Length: 453
Picture (cartoon, rainbow, N blue to C red):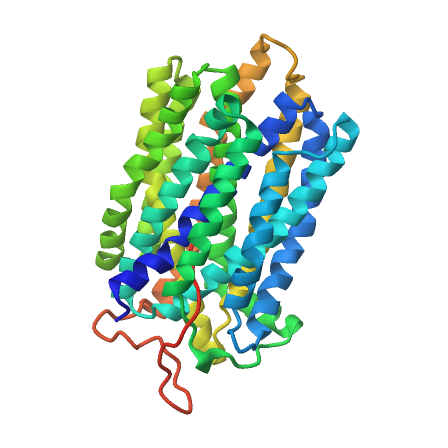
């Protein structure tokens, strides 16, 4: 059993990686559109192309990680050497080095691509270590609760404070503060991270690895459900900045309460969801979280006051906590099944493939937003939004999530059907080593790194 001190250190990186990613999703487009007055339609079009390119980079990054075999490990080197460039690029996003609108568009797209590439190598390798480091159900449910505790702290800072800090102390100052927090937590987490050298075998070739990954029907169902769940949550975070600016106007303090209360509620509930994971199948917990999020989100269509918006956001924390815990455990379950089939631990490929699908979803997100900006005739320079603009934002926040999550629920039902046919593949808490692959010698934990989004 890994000591509590090391489990805490390992999980602390969730503050940094969630902080940067959520801040980027929440205010990057908002900053360039409303403050620098770059065309919202052109940014959306550029991000569609960027999302497709980055999707393939995720896939390649996962494959490269699986095939790495250095003295430091196959995961840790990317975290050690990727952490600093990651935070520098985040700062440069909010401290543009060019000034014309045309140049700002290309600057945003190029720096975003480089930032996301660094983020991919760091976060993917952090996440790929979770199933390897903690093979038993009891350890996983314990660590995933700690991860989500720290992750929600990062979410609160990134989602609830990025906009208010940017507007009050300046966007560059906000970026410096967030970058400093991230780099500290990433390198602290190395103290509690380890790899198992028995798993550093040569992985499958790329074509074979992709084929084997998609032969895993449970992964196909999982990743398609994940696509629509991630699309829902990322669109919610991005749209919330516009919703609180143009639909139900919130002050900076109210905006922080709106998003902050959601994640504050999610902190204790993440421990509740981790207990649920021990009592029932991971797939059942994921389905429950999907239903709760979809139903609660409908209220945004009808909310008319700041109090109502804050209360809806608070209730949404129930579903958020469920996603944060259950989706991590479900993917670890899928990876374990693959390890039993192929005889190889291929966390990198699975996290990379998951990232590939999710990034395709990001392109879909920006396509939806681009259509919305075009349909409503949205212009950031217009002081009073049109009725069509307000209706559009209400539909994006209080209608589209339910539709997307209904699709996700259908794929989760397919996963459940396949899971029931194959039996319960969850690790046994009474046999903590049940998921460790047999090797020439009994593998024992040695040292590495962590994460779980």
